[in-house]
Length: 111
Image (cartoon, rainbow, N blue to C red; front, side):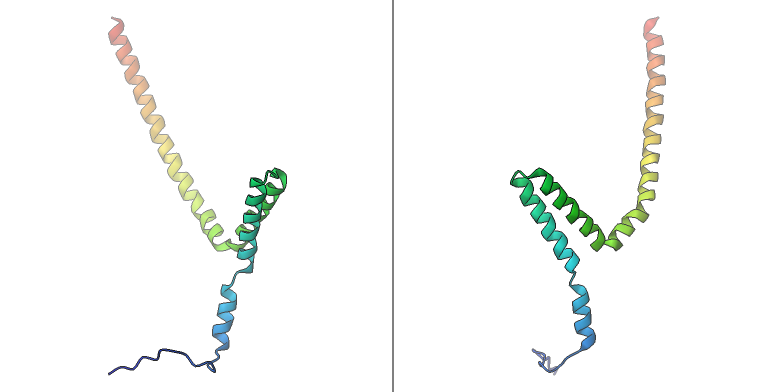
């Protein structure tokens, strides 16, 4: 038979656990979110310049808070650009083939 404790005693204090909880709280994230909300409210209130500045500041703070995500996107960007370039090359080849076929058809119909 297994006994599972249902509660943790209050005197169990683990400083490492408390430190990791404190690191998990991202104050920059909260400030960024508040700034973005304030910018949106200012834009809705018709104060475009102040709203735009607040929204831009919120976006900048969000980018600061998400450095890892931003770095991952930045590193993945060249792969996406290569894929898009390959797709554009295929489209260009297809358009050229269609133009050649159009010319052949035009010559046949002109006879």
